[in-house]
Amino acid sequence: MRAAFRLARDALPDYCCKFSRHDFTLPQLFACLVVKEHLGRTYRGAEALLRDCDNWLADVGLRRAPDHNTLWRAAKCLLAKCRVARLLDALARWAALAKVLGLSLKPLAIDSTYFEPRHASRHYERRLREARKRRAAGRPGGGSRGRARRRRQGNRDRRRGDRRRRRAVKRLPKLAVGVAAHSHLVLSLWAGTGGGPDYRHFEPVVYDAWRRVPHRRFKVAADAGYDSEPNPRLARRDMGLASLLPPDCGRPRKGGGPPGGRWRRHMDRLLATKGSRKRCGYTQRWQVETVNSMIKRNLGSAMRARTTVGRRHELLLRVLTHNIMLLAEG
Picture 1 (tube, rainbow, N blue to C red):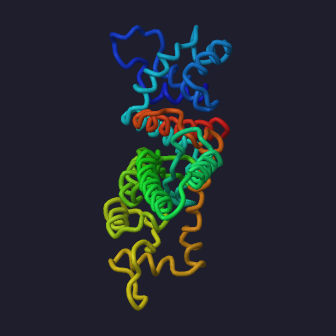
Picture 2: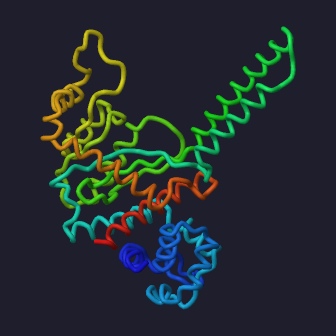
């Protein structure tokens, strides 16, 4: 809580409006939100917890705990895009001063992951599908008419299940992060909803990380989901970064020829063998998988919010909380 308060005090103003009541400052409210996310509480649960922890409130200069409605409004204000960018800028400055980024030693690793839209286990969903199948199999009806009726009902259930799966995929929360492989700090991110290709997130994630760090000559490693001819060209020509993207996406050429595009052929030669992948640093890409696992294990893999905007704000807060946990432990 103290680390979150110091970070927000370094990056944010005290108040978002000069006409506000000035009961709480933005750094104080951000510290309360980080505690809420770290302990996996709701807004009402965070309010009840803070009321019982006077020493925590005293550490950030609070005389009383903020109301749950105040915390909800503060989350909408503090987790806007510009304020999250300021907080990540301050985190990058802190890490650079402490010399823990290590981008000269290990690359910037990029990957995306999905989160659960609700608190329902896979076991529960599987048993629910099995129960529906048993009910459908036990419906009465015999003879040719009964078989035809069951066949039509099975086709309707199949189409209904396909529509349900499509709607579920469109509502899946998605997070793409750029991670310093040496320190596991998240330097940049993209948060949204729905499935889709990963290569379109390459430019915003890499550019945000590139502009935040003082050492702007590092490598970028990503999996084949980010394979695209414009992506390595953008990284090398516009930002001067060495990109490591295996050209394994798409249909292979007939006869086993090299992939199309100058930069994709260069990536194919650079990452041809296991030894060359290790020498160029591509084998450190799995560190971003570790960070995704850390966020899900420590802070949860399911969303508590029900709206698209609320889930995006929750993803942003989880990433900030992950970074603050690493800096506080260091």
